[in-house]
Image 1 (cartoon, one colour):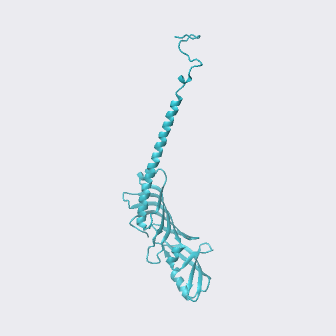
Image 2 (cartoon, one colour; image 1 turned 120 degrees about the horizontal axis):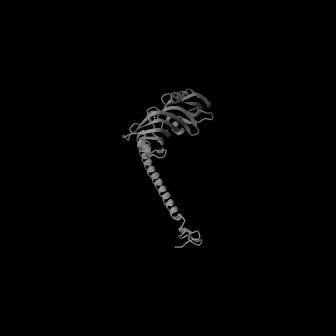
Image 3 (cartoon, one colour; image 1 turned 90 degrees about the vertical axis):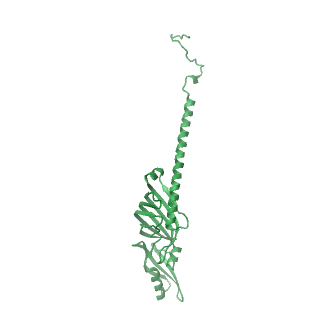
Amino acid sequence: MKRHPDGSIGHRPDPGDDFASVRPPLRRTRRRAVIFTACLLTVGATAVVVDRVAASRVESRTAEAFQKGMGTPERPSVEVRGFPVLPQMASGTLRHVDITAEDIPARGNSRPLPVTRLTVGLDELQTSSDADQAQARTVDATAFLSYEDLSDALGLEIEGDSEPGRVRAQIVLPFSGDVTVSTAVAAVSANRIAFTDLSVTSGRLPAAGQALLAKALAEPVQLHSIPEGLHLRSVTVAPSGLNAHFTGDTVTFRSETAAA
């Protein structure tokens, strides 16, 4: 054995020795850290994919049930909000669900009015073993009614007015020419839209025209093509149609049930 000047015995690294023999194996440690991080990322990515697949299945079933209940020609768009979705499904309650449906057919016998587009936000949607039924704690919805659909339902040519909260109706009468009237739009009870404060803005309105307006606008229009349990709160005038705002509490959706 080699004796050193200080009296100790044993091998001491000389300045020229390979320091790798006395330092910790850093390369191996780093490699393990990289592998561990990659594993974590893989597990996380897999969890996201599995959760997204589960959400897609819920969205598909919800869209199918809504289409069946409302009779829409195309399947609506459904999005389950919040991540992860699997724990929400396990609890039986989805925190928030957004639904957008197009062209909901007209219902009712008196001046049936279709809904051009319906957007629905559902909070705390509780699902059950019965796939055809679900209940939301609160619902906020907007039904867009295009002037084209509104004109067909009323038998008058309806368009937006320059004054806020009002629309114009044009009437073509024999021997009297075109008559244009302006009317305010308001939400009234029982999910109805009323036309009030009628005024003639162009032309002359004879008795025949007054009778036609009375038939078309005197009675509020009932909105049938919406889910049950929603209540009309307001109606606003937009450039291309009317936006009817609805809310509801503890609303039950059934695929076999159409609309109110």
